[in-house]
Structure formats: C-alpha cells, structure tokens
Image 1 (tube, rainbow, N blue to C red):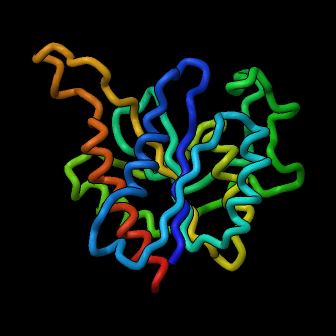
Image 2 (tube, rainbow, N blue to C red):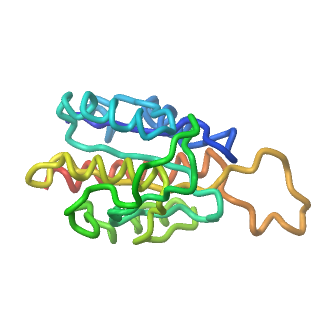
Length: 207
C-alpha cells in the first residue's frame, strides 16, 4: 500500500508551518501497522501554481491514501475536514503574492466535494490520543481548501482515499502557567494523533 503525506510551506502571516514537520515526522514513524506501507512525503509551496503543478505528478504515482496536513491559525483543535468547497478567496495572496482570478475553483462544478474517508472513525482515532479534535465542514477559502478540492477531483471510484487534516499552530515559547490549560497541542501530541489517524485510514482503505 502506498501512502502520500503532504504538508505545506510558510505563507503570509505564518512563517512557521507545522504541517510540513508533521508530514515528515509521520513518514519516519516506525510502527508494526506501517510495516508493509510505503510512505512518501511532499511539502507543497503555499502557492496555487505549486498545487496545480505538483498534484498531477504526485497522483501519477498511484497512491492508495493521500493525507494532507494544513495549518489553521485560529483553531485550537485538530480538525478533520469532511469536504472541500468550490470557493476560493480573491482577497488573500499566496506565498508568491498571487491571487485567484475568480472566487470559484471549477466553473460549472458542484458546490462541494466530500471525502469518502470515515469521519467518525477518524475522529475517534484522533481523540484517543488525548488531542482535542472535531470534524469540520469548512476548510476555508485559501490554499488548504483549494488543494483539497484539486486532490478530491482526481479521485476515481473513491481511490485514492483523500483526507485533509487542519492542525492548530504549535506554541513556540512557553506560556504563563495560568494559561497552560488552553495551549494548543505540541508537535509530539499532534504526531500521536496523526499516527492514529493514519492507522485508521489504512484500515478503511483495506475494507
């Protein structure tokens, strides 16, 4: 079985994007559940051009599972995105300063595309790690949603199994003790959740 793990590089307002480190760390993880799994990692530049250029080549490798990790700067929990909307913001530039020419990704396309991954199983897997997690129907209108849409539209008969995971920002410096209860998960905690999510996706793909 082939698994493709995708993260993103920095973008305006986010000089440190933990999704790249998370994807790379998950590819190196050694667990019995991954013994017969071929894992590849790709870090997308946070640009519309990179998504359009890189995804066709990545999907040509015929992965069975594609897991995309992205940063959601205002969220404090891990979010399992259940759909990508046919919408994109023309206001916010990508990492190269480019903006989409229109607010719709695919003219004449559906309003949204849904993943076939089992959201309830994934949510249970993520929460079993102790990391706050929830499902989400709103992947935003920026590169995360755009990349998710482009990935989902390349699926055929439900293959590969594609899932986008939004992660909160990782605290860089310690916070005061009285605020620790509201801290975002650490990279190690997100890694534990991501590992369990991948195991759940592998099980779903084999059914």
